[in-house]
Amino acid sequence: AINPQMISLGTAVLTETVFAFLVVASLCAMTRALLRRSLGWYAIAGILIGLSALVRPTLEFLPLLLLPALAWLAPDTRWKPCLMLMLGMTLCFGPWIVRNEHAIGAASDPSLMRNTLLHGSYPDFMYHDNPRSRGFPYRFDPHESEVRTPAQALERIHQNFVAEPGRTLRWYLLSKPIHFFDWDFLEGQGDIFINTTLHSPYLEGQRDFV
Image 1 (cartoon, rainbow, N blue to C red):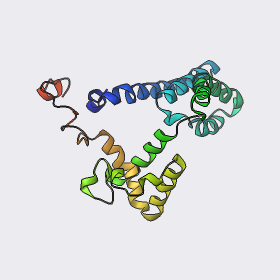
Image 2: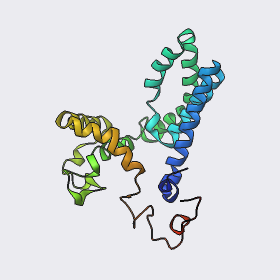
Image 3: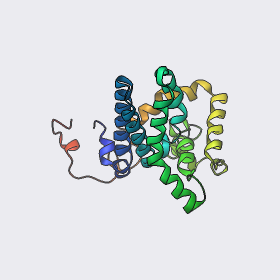
Image 4: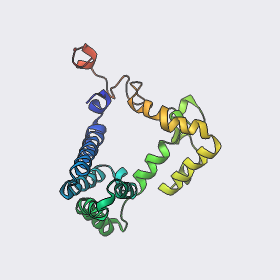
C-alpha cells in the first residue's frame, strides 16, 4: 500500500502483492485462533499459509518453525491446533506437491529457492564491492554456476558469515531490508519505473500519492 515499487513493477503486482496480503491474512487468522482458542481459525490460518506458499514457495517450510512455537504458545491443547494448522495447509499445498511429483518427478523445483538465497547473499548487491556488478552480482561471480541447490546456497551464506560475520549480519538485518524499500531502484530507467513514463501521479505531485 505504501511502496510505489510494488505498484509499478509488473512482477511484484503478480506475486509480492498477493503474497504479502495472504501472509498478513494468515497472521490475522493465527492471532484470532490463539485469542479465541478456535480450531476453525487454526484451519483457516493453515489454508492461508498454504495459499501463500502456492504464490511464493518461501513459506513451504514455515510449519517447521510454527508448530514448535504453537505447541509452546498453546500448551493446554498442543496437538489439536497443530493438527488443524497442518490439515489446512496440506489441503491447499498438498495437491501441488502431488502434481509436481507426477509432472517433474520431484516435490518442487528448487531453482527459485536457490536463486532467492544466492542472489540475495551478496552484500549491497555487489560482487566484491565492484560497482559495475551492482544489482546483478551473480553475473560477475565465476563460481555462481557451482551453486546448484538451496543447500549449497545456504552453505555459501554460512561461508559469508564465517568470513565476515559483522558485515554479513549487517547486510541481512539492516542494509538488505533498507534496499528492499529504497527508492534508489536498481533496474529500469530510474526512480520507481522500469519503462520511460510520461505521466504518473507520483511524478505530478498529487497530494495523496506524495
